[in-house]
Length: 216
Ligand SMILES: [Zn+2]
Ligand SMILES: [Zn+2]
Image 1 (cartoon, rainbow, N blue to C red):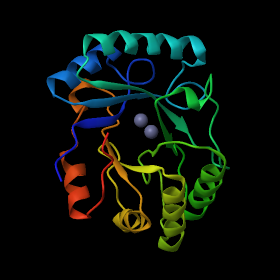
Image 2: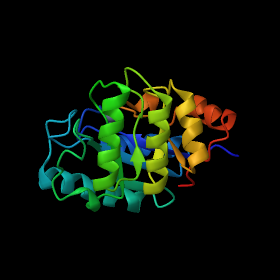
Image 3: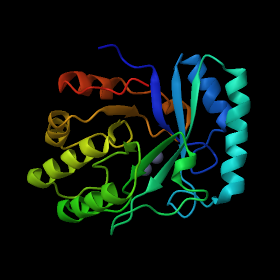
């Protein structure tokens, strides 16, 4: 397996990232990335004061211009949306379906039982593409519950992110997800230019555990 030339989790200054969308695309071009997803949070998801259709459409227009300037690169108009502690998504203006790629993420500390309950409810009611930094806020992990979530993710065709900002701790969950048929993605969760595309360790983990990476 070759390392995929993508980074599917990048924040710009439309949320809590430092670089502009244009700076991100220029850096990704220097790194010869073939695909990037700009995945800002939009208020009321945590991590951004900004939301509303105007903000989302302004970023979409900037991405459209950059797609013309960098035709060799696929630039995905993405969003990272909070998963609620009682299940489901925090609202996003215009709805999640308007984005090319939606990352659902938990941004509250939880034990295995609450995480499992929120994940199973969310997967039953909302479609999304990628589960972001899946154990970044997990305080306890029970494998029998992890297996249930892994099976529900496979059924819903939600890929699981290998994050470089929140390195995966409970690798047995990744193996259960692999065995259930899940795909995996690489995402830096970059908030600054220097961390874009830094995914070597995550790729090594995928190889070591024989995880199938999404072919973006
Ligand atoms: Zn996040
Ligand atoms: Zn993020």
